[in-house]
Image 1: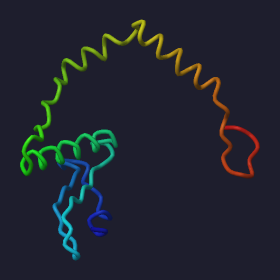
Image 2 (image 1 turned 90 degrees about the vertical axis):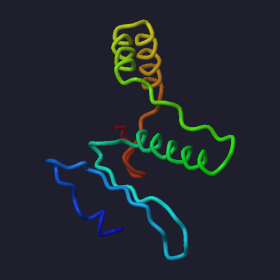
Image 3 (image 1 turned 135 degrees about the horizontal axis):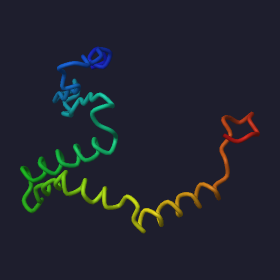
Length: 116
Protein backbone atom coordinates (compact mmCIF):
# COMPACT_ATOMS: atom_id res chain seq x y z
CA UNK A 1 0.00 0.00 0.00
CA UNK A 2 2.90 2.37 0.64
CA UNK A 3 4.01 1.85 -2.95
CA UNK A 4 0.51 2.76 -4.22
CA UNK A 5 0.60 5.94 -2.16
CA UNK A 6 3.97 7.02 -3.56
CA UNK A 7 2.83 6.93 -7.19
CA UNK A 8 1.26 10.27 -8.17
CA UNK A 9 -1.88 10.39 -10.28
CA UNK A 10 -1.69 11.47 -13.89
CA UNK A 11 -3.30 14.90 -14.22
CA UNK A 12 -4.79 14.29 -17.67
CA UNK A 13 -7.32 11.57 -18.52
CA UNK A 14 -7.22 10.08 -15.01
CA UNK A 15 -9.98 9.44 -12.49
CA UNK A 16 -7.44 10.47 -9.79
CA UNK A 17 -8.60 7.93 -7.25
CA UNK A 18 -7.86 4.38 -6.25
CA UNK A 19 -10.22 2.25 -4.15
CA UNK A 20 -9.08 -1.27 -3.31
CA UNK A 21 -10.69 -3.88 -1.06
CA UNK A 22 -7.96 -5.44 1.04
CA UNK A 23 -7.55 -8.35 3.44
CA UNK A 24 -4.77 -8.04 5.97
CA UNK A 25 -2.48 -10.85 7.04
CA UNK A 26 -4.36 -11.16 10.32
CA UNK A 27 -7.71 -11.65 8.50
CA UNK A 28 -9.26 -8.19 8.69
CA UNK A 29 -11.02 -6.77 5.65
CA UNK A 30 -10.98 -3.12 4.73
CA UNK A 31 -10.74 -0.47 2.08
CA UNK A 32 -7.64 1.28 0.87
CA UNK A 33 -8.70 4.65 -0.44
CA UNK A 34 -6.43 7.07 -2.25
CA UNK A 35 -8.05 10.19 -3.68
CA UNK A 36 -6.45 13.32 -5.06
CA UNK A 37 -7.30 16.35 -2.90
CA UNK A 38 -8.65 18.16 -5.97
CA UNK A 39 -11.31 15.49 -6.35
CA UNK A 40 -12.64 15.11 -2.80
CA UNK A 41 -12.22 16.70 0.59
CA UNK A 42 -12.61 15.21 4.07
CA UNK A 43 -16.35 15.87 4.16
CA UNK A 44 -16.84 14.00 0.87
CA UNK A 45 -14.91 11.03 2.27
CA UNK A 46 -17.07 10.99 5.39
CA UNK A 47 -20.19 10.86 3.21
CA UNK A 48 -18.66 8.18 1.00
CA UNK A 49 -17.81 5.89 3.92
CA UNK A 50 -21.17 6.54 5.60
CA UNK A 51 -22.95 5.34 2.45
CA UNK A 52 -20.70 2.28 2.13
CA UNK A 53 -21.35 1.28 5.74
CA UNK A 54 -25.11 1.80 5.34
CA UNK A 55 -25.20 -0.29 2.14
CA UNK A 56 -23.17 -3.03 3.85
CA UNK A 57 -25.41 -3.05 6.93
CA UNK A 58 -28.58 -2.96 4.79
CA UNK A 59 -27.34 -6.06 2.97
CA UNK A 60 -26.41 -8.01 6.12
CA UNK A 61 -28.96 -6.94 8.71
CA UNK A 62 -32.73 -6.55 8.71
CA UNK A 63 -34.19 -3.18 9.56
CA UNK A 64 -31.18 -1.10 8.53
CA UNK A 65 -32.33 1.40 5.89
CA UNK A 66 -30.55 1.87 2.58
CA UNK A 67 -28.84 5.29 2.29
CA UNK A 68 -31.23 8.05 1.24
CA UNK A 69 -30.99 9.42 -2.28
CA UNK A 70 -28.53 12.23 -2.82
CA UNK A 71 -30.07 15.66 -3.13
CA UNK A 72 -30.15 17.33 -6.50
CA UNK A 73 -26.97 19.25 -7.27
CA UNK A 74 -28.97 21.86 -9.22
CA UNK A 75 -31.46 22.37 -6.36
CA UNK A 76 -28.62 22.76 -3.84
CA UNK A 77 -26.86 25.20 -6.15
CA UNK A 78 -30.07 27.27 -6.37
CA UNK A 79 -30.27 27.35 -2.54
CA UNK A 80 -26.62 28.39 -2.31
CA UNK A 81 -27.14 31.19 -4.81
CA UNK A 82 -30.27 32.38 -2.96
CA UNK A 83 -28.19 32.58 0.26
CA UNK A 84 -25.90 35.19 -1.33
CA UNK A 85 -26.90 38.61 -0.02
CA UNK A 86 -29.69 37.21 2.19
CA UNK A 87 -30.45 38.14 5.80
CA UNK A 88 -29.22 34.67 6.80
CA UNK A 89 -25.84 35.41 5.22
CA UNK A 90 -25.67 38.77 7.00
CA UNK A 91 -26.49 37.08 10.32
CA UNK A 92 -23.89 34.34 9.72
CA UNK A 93 -21.23 36.86 8.69
CA UNK A 94 -21.85 38.92 11.83
CA UNK A 95 -21.73 35.81 14.03
CA UNK A 96 -18.39 34.61 12.64
CA UNK A 97 -16.86 38.08 12.58
CA UNK A 98 -17.80 38.52 16.26
CA UNK A 99 -16.34 35.10 17.01
CA UNK A 100 -13.07 35.99 15.26
CA UNK A 101 -12.87 39.41 16.89
CA UNK A 102 -13.40 37.97 20.38
CA UNK A 103 -11.10 34.96 20.12
CA UNK A 104 -7.55 35.31 21.45
CA UNK A 105 -4.79 35.04 18.85
CA UNK A 106 -2.58 32.00 18.57
CA UNK A 107 1.21 32.04 18.83
CA UNK A 108 3.23 30.01 16.37
CA UNK A 109 4.99 28.03 19.11
CA UNK A 110 5.70 28.03 22.83
CA UNK A 111 8.52 30.53 22.44
CA UNK A 112 6.45 33.07 20.49
CA UNK A 113 4.63 35.77 22.43
CA UNK A 114 3.21 37.56 19.42
CA UNK A 115 0.03 36.59 17.64
CA UNK A 116 -0.58 35.43 14.13
